[in-house]
Image 1 (cartoon, rainbow, N blue to C red):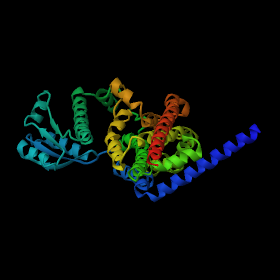
Image 2 (cartoon, rainbow, N blue to C red):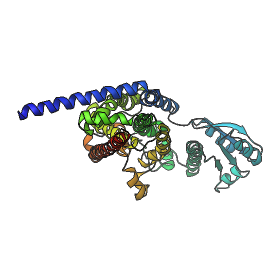
Image 3 (cartoon, rainbow, N blue to C red):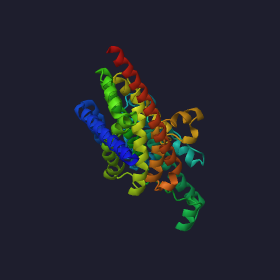
Image 4 (cartoon, rainbow, N blue to C red):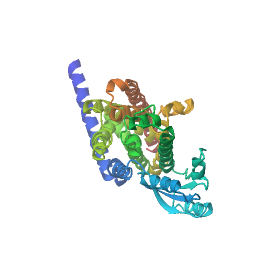
Length: 404
């Protein structure tokens, strides 16, 4: 008899969970706003961002030159800068006022000023200075213009040093110019590009944000339409909040099993971003991360009264979450208080684990700390979602009884 009773309870639980799953899926498919965040945004946004940053590095940054020297050496310096892939000598200005006007109108991004005594100082065995005025509003253009001028100055300095040394063979000249040879190897980002460094973190953040936005919008729509009272007979019929939370989460997991594969596996391969993780390790990581984002979204949705509120909230925290993840700013330089705040979000540990696996070539054993914390998020946010749903259902039930 006990086995028959237990079997009957299990059958009821499965039937009730499937019914909630079907009803929630119907609501999702009928809501255009939810479909936009669940399907359209995850499909289009990664392609848009990846296409924008597909060049990886900034090339041919426009520069204006103020050449007060008008010497053979200054002209050679200008030609070498123009020959570099990072800089394009776009204009020649007669003085600094004209150059500042071009820079103020954003026609150029930097000013190279060569002093009148540029060649004279070199011939007198004195140090000469080339002034570089960079637009610091965009770090990528600053890096390109400054490093191009620095590389050319070092190259010319080496040539002058070799001529003054009076060596007789090419090998002696090479040793004189560069006595200590250094080979620069770019680990985990061979192209040295901005896209390969930032886009993996953005892809994982898009997964969390769109999921929370879709769940919050669906919950806000239900409250606006005063449909939360519909959960009262569901609660009485299904005999538990657990089945409600589980049925709803099954819908979201079904959708984001596809969207998560698109974001973390397909998009990096389309745009040739680093993709070094094995598919089995990626599956093991994405399973708890997706569940954590789902239950986190359900928890946040309980705080949403109107469907627009969740958009304001999640869009506001998107950029801070990217910084707090440690992808665009070193984790060691983030204050302890803000690191504690970042631990509340699954994206923090999902981004760190994803970058270490897919960009650095690690395995699941290399990210066990992040992996275990993601499972902790799953348990904690499921419990919170369960408690908040149960509380709201009880309040709705009392309100319905009072109305009756």
